Image 1: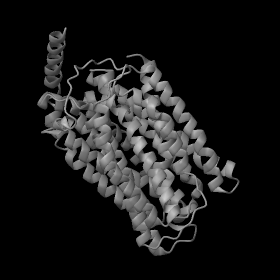
Image 2 (image 1 turned 60 degrees about the horizontal axis):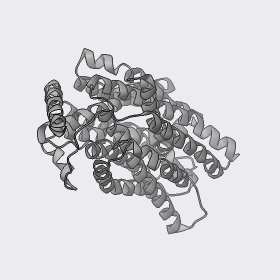
Image 3 (image 1 turned 120 degrees about the vertical axis):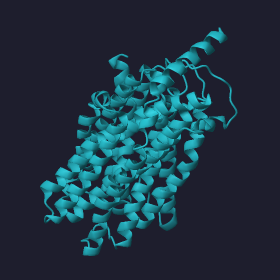
Image 4 (image 1 turned 180 degrees about the horizontal axis):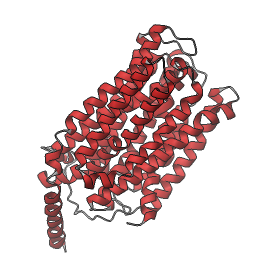
Length: 449
C-alpha cells in the first residue's frame, strides 16, 4: 500500500479529532465554567447523549451494511457527512442567550446531533480497514497511521484551543469559542475530503442481499468481538474521565491553569508506543501488547496518586500523567486493529460479514458511550462534593476532583484488562480463518463469473 493512502487514512481521524477532541477534552468544562450549566446538569446531558448512541450505533451499522455505491460501503460517508458534522460541531459550542430549560435543551440537542453524526462519520474510519487490505499486518500498520493522525489532531487542538479562545475572545471565552470552532470545522471538512479522494476499497467481498437485521447474526458466538466491546467500553470511560476532569485538577488542585494545554498535549507521546505496535506484535501476541498498555495506564494513575500524597509534587504527577499517555498508545490502538479480525471471525463462524455493524457497535458506540459516561461520572462526583465553578474549592470539593481524576480512571482501566486476558485463544485461530475465508471468497467469485 502506498504512503499516500496510508497518510490519507491518517487524515480521516485527524479530521474527526479537530472537532471531537474539543468535545472530549473540554466540553464538560465549557458547559460548567463558560456556558453556566451546573456540573450535575452537564453530566446528565453527556449521559443522555450516550443513551441515544445505544440506538443510533446499531442503526448506523445497519445503514452501512446496506450501503452500495460506486465508491464502496465506507468511503462515501466521508463525503456525505463531513459538512453536517462540522456544522453541528460549531453549534455545540455556541452560547445563545437563553434561559433555564431552553438553555439546557439547546446544549443537549446540539451535542446529541453532533454525537450522532460523529458516529456516522467515524465508524467508516474503522470499518474501511477490512476493505483497504486483507493483510493482517498491513491492518496493524494502517492502525498505526490512523493513531498518528488522531494524535496529531489531539496535539494540535490541545496546543491551540485555549490560546486561540483567549486570543480571539479577549477575555470573553464565549466569543472565543464562537470564532475558534468554525476554524477547526473547516479543517475537518477539508481533511475528510482528502481522505475520500485518495482511499479505495480494494477487497472485493461477494455481496449477498440479506434481511434488514441479518447482520446481527455475525455476533452469534463471536467472542473476540464481545471481548473487544467490553474492554473498549471500560477503556473509554476511564480515558475520557481522566482527560475531562484534568482541567479542574490542574486549575483548582495544583493552581496551574497554565499547564492544562501542555498536560493534555502530552497525549501525543502515545505515538511512541503506537508506532512500535508492528514490532511488539511480532515479538509477542496482540493480547499481551493490549494487556501491557492497560496495566501501564493503571500504573500511571498510581504514580499520580503518589505525587498527590507527596505534597502535590508536580514532577511525580506529570510523570504519572505522561506514563499513562505513553501506555495508552497500545491500549487505544489494539482494539481498532483487532476489530477487523473479529469481522473475519464472525464471517468465518456464521457466514455473515457485517463490518459496518460490528464496527459501529464495537468501536463507535464504545467510544461514544465511554465518552458520555467518562464525562458524566466525574461531573456527578464533583457535584456531589459541592463543586462551584470559577471559585476557590472547599477541601470536600477538592477530594471529589481527586477521586474523579485518580481512582475513577484507575478502576475502569483495570476492568478493561479483565476480558482481554481471554483473547489469546481466538488470536491463535487467525491464520486458519484467513486461509478459509480466502478460499470461500475465491470459490464464490468463481461461481458468479
